[in-house]
Image 1 (cartoon, rainbow, N blue to C red):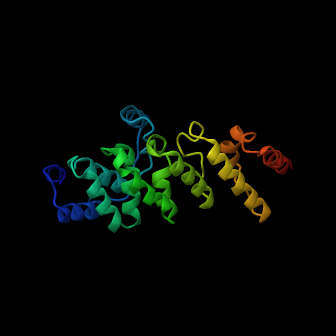
Image 2 (tube, helix red, strand yellow):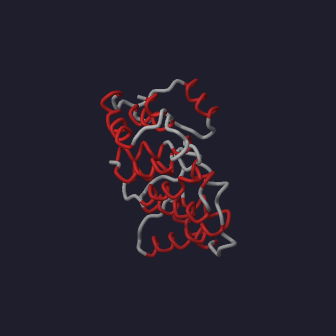
Image 3 (cartoon, helix red, strand yellow):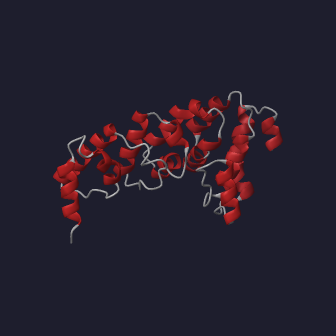
Length: 214
């Protein structure tokens, strides 16, 4: 199957292979030994495949055997017709694909998804957003994570890519949540505190500290 893909697949053959893989390899979690995880990190710093379903790993491997020429177009076509599991597989492979900058808009489609697993396939445990996203898309990814109750900790580069514009967005978000009597994720302050003075959020941070006192 992989050899046929490398030889230059037509779209119908690629669609069939992509759809059939779960029946061929199963959907069990991918089990990696520490040596395997170290090899993944050495091959691609920040790449964390532990816990992926086996079929997702197989789908990504299939895509990595596609010719480089036309890869972004094939990815886009697959993404438009994919079900949830297929979308998760497609987006988890972002750090590994050729010409990653050409896939940024496709990754943006994943971030816009209302399906949390799809959003997290782009945002979590991946060096792709940190390396490729411009500031605007990065900031909206972090804010979207808070909106969908997705943790921020698995976003790689969260501290190094913190910025004043994001801090202002999070300040406003925190004020809206507090005014509505809704809880504020403690992770929010991680991106806001370094710029609290610059964006006039010292009082917000102080109030958050008081709220944490039992």
